[in-house]
Image 1: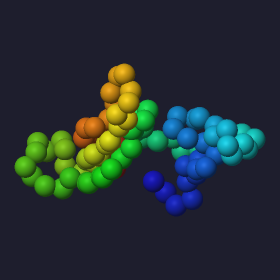
Image 2: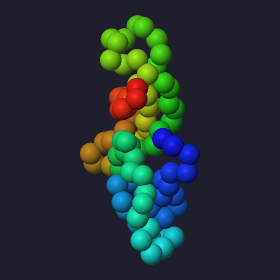
Image 3: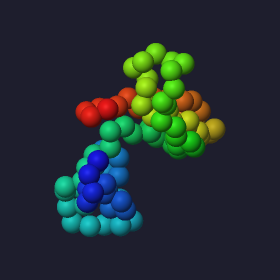
Image 4: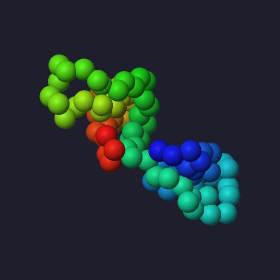
Amino acid sequence: TKVGLNFGFPYCHAQGIVDRDFPKANACAGVTQPVQTMGPHAAAMGVHFYTGDMFPAEYRNALFVARKGSWNRTQKYGYDVVVVMGGEGT
């Protein structure tokens, strides 16, 4: 990322979803989109950049995210650990 990027808060979320409680014309124009979304009804509970050597080399500098989810959904989502792999410059 670079200084000055617009990530949309509080007007634009996820992959271009306009917040209905904070209406703004062209709310998602110029917003830097997320590298990865966490999914519906899931919340990041902890994050850790892996810099060790216990896992295969492709996981080095990846971001591990522990998620919680909703207990009352028919199709469960969350309650897991996901890995966000690095992109350019990693």
